[in-house]
Image (tube, rainbow, N blue to C red; front, side, top):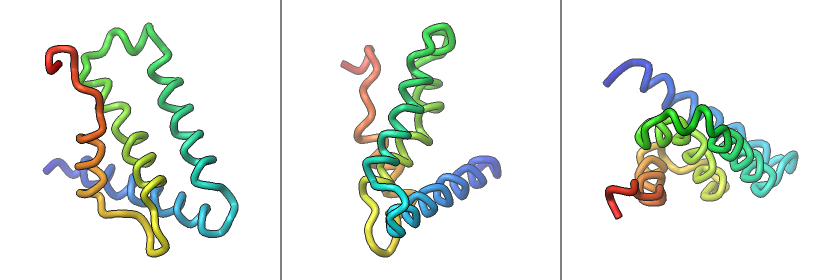
Length: 102
C-alpha cells in the first residue's frame, strides 16, 4: 500500500476522533458536523467546471473523505468512532452507482 494512503487514513481517523470529542464535550452537535460536511461536498459537486471535467471515479475519490467523515460522525458512540475498515465498507455500500452500473 502506498504510504500516502496510510497517512490519509490516519488523518481521516484523527479528524473523526476530533469531531467525536467536539460532540462529546457539547461544543458541536452531530447535526452541526453533518451539515458542515454536506456543505463542503455540495460546494465541490456544485462547481460544474471542475466537477464535469472529472471521471466518476475521481468524483468518488474527492468525495470519499467527506463521506467517510459523515459516516464516522453519524455512527459515533461513547468509546469513539468505528474502525476505518468498517467506515470504508459503509462508504462503498452507500455511494451512488455510476450510470453504467444501473
